[in-house]
Image (cartoon, rainbow, N blue to C red; front, side, top):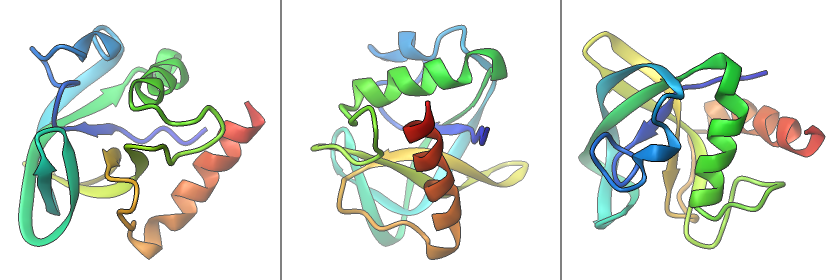
Length: 132
């Protein structure tokens, strides 16, 4: 199963009200930046050239990966059989850390387009969801 880390920028961060969805469910966390995105509302991001969103990159524990990600999807009100909901979509993005670039999941405005070369990761994740 594909197990990308999760980039978060809002209430899932450490010290925030929804961090309980991730607490104890990750092996490590790194400060990270999501280039080419900006905050379009306090809890929403979308693509914007020459902008950056600061956040945290969570490497979820393999043993609880699926349940943790499913819980986060539920928090963001994604349907159980998909990656696009009313308020958010989860898709693969390129995140920058001090150690280099990492491909990760992120939640953004539902009309936000992903990078075409990362589309196979999204297709694989949709297939996993439908088969679970």
